[in-house]
Image (cartoon, rainbow, N blue to C red):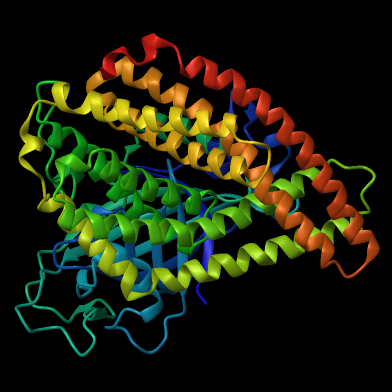
Length: 549
């Protein structure tokens, strides 16, 4: 299994060869006081010299770089091996690591699987070689903990062009690379050299990074214009925006208005959801917080758009696609539901002073294992051919949209009535639920109303770029209805599962705790009913619906 190092937070700077970097203790001093949390004493450790040699891998058309991913094999330093760097927001990145192994021209299968959603199965080959003469300096606190690390890098790099057809590829594709800084592909570019400073936060607070930033800028350093050494090589030393994959997404066509084609408006939304599904693939594999939820939501949004606006698309193409999206959402849903139940129960027992600590821990551990099992099933599906066929179909959807003649008509004429129909479905289901007696039939109708309210919300959000505040207000009202019904439905499902687990409990104490949790969920369900009544009343205001007529 690969080792995952989460949230690497760093800043990069460009430095001239003659710039002198002050001692690290000076860097964290400001107006005579230390930026270290608590103002405790700090000391700079002995500098460490490292010789790093890395070969970077990507597809010939740089699909990983376009997705913000960096894949390399590096020797030297404290972490020699295969590294896959994954954006984690802002200046942070997660890093997946594997040992060097014997193979140096073939990307390990584990990593090929992890990036397949972005490589689309195309061969991975060496695209750049970078040698770094690094001086590492570390700031330590009184206990010896590293607070911040500063790397002074003298870099020599070159771009490796794609090999000719049939060259540099072996059995199984995904091959190519270099060893010891020697290229195995033809067409190596001219060498580039520069100096850069990397400041990485270790055990210190975020304010420490800010303090070092201020002092380095006072020394004349400026932020590196490229996000990584690789990005600089791929751009040829120019602006990173020149790199393939940057700029407008495929199919973008400027500002959309009510006079634009209806298909163009909906496809802009569809492209965003397809991109989100692909972007969440790696976070889901790494079990990043909220990633399953984000991928599931994007899948649902996409399926909902293809349903709400189906008159704009050819039915024989889109119908099976909707079915596959339903399948993916279902697989993700099992893991998400298990995650929600675990977190909800953990929060409840954590605030219950009467619950025995050992029993509470046992219950949470049991639910956590249920989530782990569900997540493992999701990972198995993400490695399967069905999922990758779906991704290929989504690529076709956005590159060669199967639109009907109606898609060319003005958005202002076509789209509002279609959004309005989504609310009509919600209203019908709610009215049927209110007329039904308490019991399974009513719960099923409320469940359907929740799904329809979510579809109506998504419909409003998908056209808000054109219809502005009218569509936004409509979507917000539908979201309030959806959330109230969702709270109620979650409670229904959780109560069913709590009851089943209580009946299967191995001891009386555990069974009793499940019973207490069941009672708390009943009270939560009653509160959600009141919220729904208020939300539904607000959603029926006529001014919310005028624009859809």
